[in-house]
Amino acid sequence: MTLQQLKYAITVADNQSMNEAAKELFISQPSLSNAIKELEKEIGISIFTRSNRGIKISSDGAEFLGYARQVVEQTSLLE
Image (cartoon, rainbow, N blue to C red):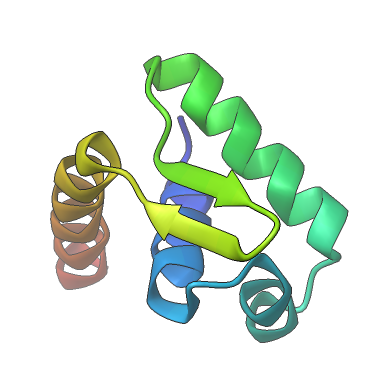
């Protein structure tokens, strides 16, 4: 798990769209999707539930994102 992956997950959650998050992050949508899938595989939970209508944050994902936001915030304070 990298800080970059945490930032990606937070951005996806904030935008509720992979496409919009990818535009905001200046990366391709497939790259973002792969990074999120790798993160989910590593931590063993699904952060987002995907459907043809878009993505939603899962209950496990909501808890994870709370911790991810804390880590990113603490890192920015250290810097």
